[in-house]
Length: 331
Image 1 (cartoon, helix red, strand yellow):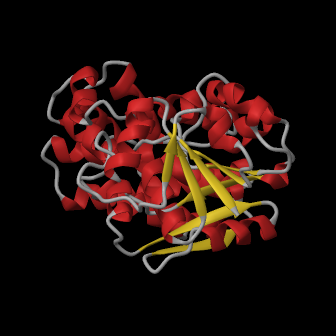
Image 2 (image 1 turned 180 degrees about the vertical axis):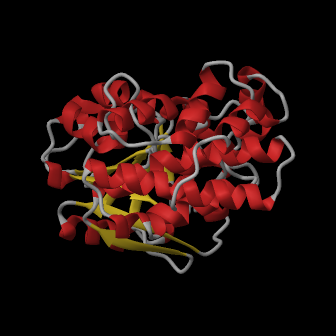
């Protein structure tokens, strides 16, 4: 199998390393030629994963046609809100019957589409050609070779198994699943819930509060996932609770870091600077997640609070008071 990772941010680069370490012929597309040159000459991504050595067999390219030529697996590693435009640029060069897999975890703001739906809409690929990868996978830890597991979800189980084989290493263990919806809902909401955990931490609240947010956030995720057609068992696994715990707990999480800055009283612009300009997907996804939930009659109070803090001027303290002031009911 020949794989190409389209996007050389921290997670795209980490996954390109995983594929290469698994023995898969892998290319990494970088938009900027100077970054591709640095990766090829220094075997490091100085912008997004400085200090972490990349395999010498990994080749970076800045030309889209060169990147996609002969690709069996196209791994989309650009932010969720730019995926549609990027796919439009890549479309003339995407080989027929190649598998397209999303690494992005978000909901498109303009259409409320999941990333697999965006891929299918732009490329007109059959649903069995589209896969997603989701799990407790903090990019830096994976790139360092620390043990981690993930879920590869595709309607075509055989394609999922092919991807599984292409990225299975001694430190990275992929499991297969056919529940694409559940994996994507888990990936999108964990970013929003991580923002809430960061906000609570930044405001000075402790472990009890964090545990409460994670647990109630999981309930919120499962409610919406089932309403959209996903499975509860998926969201109780790596792509749900696993990803949620990692993203809500780690200082390496951009969404938690962004939320912490807001909880400390910083503005959204100042919080963006705290994440070194990298995208905190939950900031963009909280609005469309709330809209999706409203369409399906699902209550998502944590998502609602995050949306109000990030985009409607509500303070973190008032958000916490609003959540605690909700009417009591059975769990």
